[in-house]
Image 1: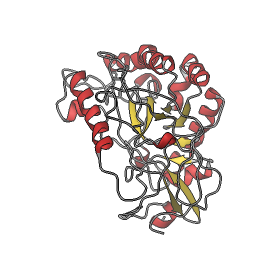
Image 2: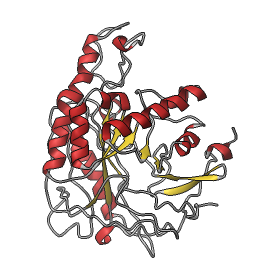
Image 3: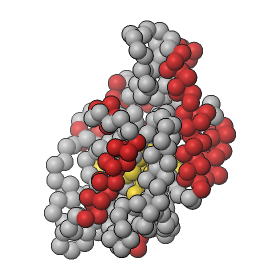
Image 4: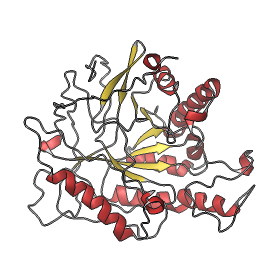
Length: 350
């Protein structure tokens, strides 16, 4: 498969000097999308036939470990038993919509959580049938996994998933398989701050880029040890975007950052002074066909403590939960996007 057929031709230009005006609701300078990763029950485990337990995103053993890790199993179980419900209470109490990057097998194992997502009207996007890296998969196996995930999420949630995000990295075939299965957007890309269309052979796929810059892997990789450090890191990122001088003409500035937390300690939502355009990645924003990307009919007012009242006029950011729950990652990304069904939007650089 060529890069053109796979939709993987590298593009170092993008929108360039004149990005489109996304027209954030209310003229907001920043748009926020919250994402909860729901993965517990989809990880590798000996009871599910795997040779060893999943060790990623756990607190880790104090010694080398092979085979079945009962400690790791219970850490994953915490996320679905308790962590998810802490996040659910945070978001529903404030009437904040969000996207769920969901492992299909994990959803199958918690019908009550699925019901809660349906009731909240959350956008549940595909994240795999099992918690596996798609970049390592053989073509026939990956095709079957995406088909299984799509059918399973449709059954457990009641609606087809509109979007997809693989665990870390896709394969060369992934984008074609998503189009074959009717996906409206693909978030397996880290290359921009605004959505764009990507040619995939003779077809086009809407790309809603993702970012791992503010993921809670910062605790492991940068030595963060407290919720206060992480809160400061996230707040500084939002404040930086709010204070950037907009370019001449339209100013499509936004936060593309993740806010992630895997354990329950220090979970809280701070409330402050900023009104925000907040929403899920799919379902409430319509594509416009001439690079004026967004027109959002639903605006959620949300707040976050980023400074004294009056300093942040025009900001559009959501609350800043230091989220609860092992592997229930909360991320700040782009504002929601769903294709209008017209794939004829010009693609930057093409």
